[in-house]
Amino acid sequence: MNKLDYKKEFKDLYQPKTKPSLVDVPEMTFISVSGSGDPNTSIEYKEAMEILYGLSFTIKMSKMSGNQPEGYFEYVVPPLEGLWFSDGISFDGLNVYDKNKFKWISMIRQPEFVTYEVFENAKEILAKKKPHLELSKAKLEKYHEGLCVQVMHKGSYDSEAESIKKIKEFISSNGYTEDFSDVRFHHEIYLSDPRRCAPTSLRTVIRHPVKLLSE
Figure 1 (cartoon, rainbow, N blue to C red):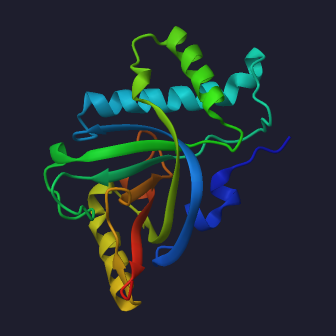
Figure 2 (cartoon, one colour; figure 1 turned 90 degrees about the vertical axis):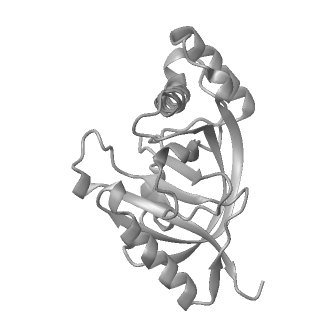
C-alpha cells in the first residue's frame, strides 16, 4: 500500500524554489510543544523533540497494537516545523543575535484522522513507555497560517540570513508587508536531519506571514 507523503503530495507547502513565492497556507492539525532558549543547548528543546516524535510515531504505529484509529491510512510522519519569536520585538529571523532569547513553538503536522481522543490515547501509551516525559506540555491544535511568502533555504541554519533577505526583497517589490503578530511568526520547516546531513546540504523552508500594503 502506498504511503501518503505530505512533502510530496503538497509540494506547494514543502517544496518551494530558492526564489521566493507567495503561498496561501490552509488550516492543518499539529502536535506542538512550546518553550524557550537556544535549540542547540536547551534541555527544554531536546525534551520537546522527544515528546513530538514520541507522540507522532506512537500514533503512526497504533495499527500494530490493535488501537488503529478510525479512518487510519498509511503515511510518512511529516517534517518538524518551528515557529520562532522573542519578547518585545517583531522577530523576523534576523534581529535576535542571542539565541538564548529565542521563544519557539515546535510542531509536527498530523494526519486528518487524528482527533483529540487519538491524541490523548497516544499520550497514555507514551507515558507508560517514557514516564520521564512531561507530556502535559504537548497540545493538539489547528493552525491556519494564511498568506505567506516562502523560500527554500539550502545550507546551514546560520546562513539563513541570505534567504530571509530574498524574502524581504520579494515582499517589498510586490506590494506586501510582513504581518508578524502573536499568532503569525517566522516559520521554518526542516526537511533534513542535521545529525545525518552536512550543514551545506541542509534544506529548510523559510516562511513569513504577509498582507497587502493596502490592508
